[in-house]
Length: 233
Ligand SMILES: Nc1nc2c(ncn2[C@@H]2O[C@H](COP(=O)(O)OP(=O)(O)OP(=O)(O)O)[C@@H](O)[C@H]2O)c(=O)[nH]1
Ligand SMILES: [Zn+2]
Image: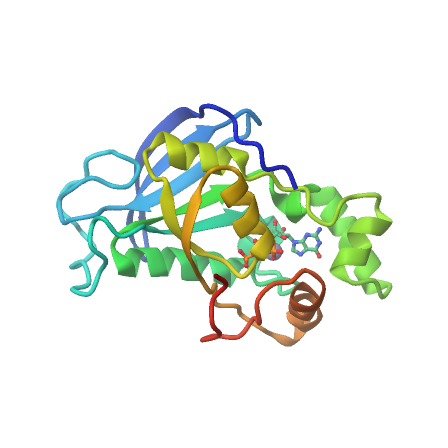
């Protein structure tokens, strides 16, 4: 896993993005990787600015919850890796789709936070074709870690540098991170992001992803993937 953050990122485009969870401010950006990532943020005070820095109009999606965080609390941030099969196709080999949905909902409910949707992270950075090859190896009995290694890939090839650089560029230096993955916490910290708190990312266990979730817990050090478990520190 690479942790070096590029100095700057380029903001490529921005617009509001109404979702079923609320109206997000969508910013497309790229870092040294030249990949188009997306930051989806939500406002701080009513009628104020989003974390991405653009002014937002009157909220159209209901009131901000009364128990939302103060403006100087670190925002909730989900750093999410692209997963075409789980998010667009509803694959139950993983739980990326429900996790993305939960993250957007949590950020919207909190009224202040961001989902950084990182493209180029497909298959933990090995790409779609290699991930499908890894799935085929899993059908033959390997687990998710062994399959990557069998393909000559590292267990995790993702870089969090562009995400860290984006946060730094918009002035967010401290976050409350939604994740179960201790390596993601370490990588972001190494890239200069202060992770003030780690909040558990609710998992969505189903029979088809049982082995996958178990392997992440047992071999990759992810926190127990049950709702309500204590977060990482
Ligand atoms: N190589 C490989 N990648 C997978 C597999 N299953 C899911 N992925 C990818 O894994 C990425 C998500 O990483 P995960 O390890 O599930 O979770 P995480 O983002 O590290 O941790 P959380 O923040 O707790 O969700 C997505 O890009 C998926 O495409 C698999 O069996 N093999
Ligand atoms: Zn997935």
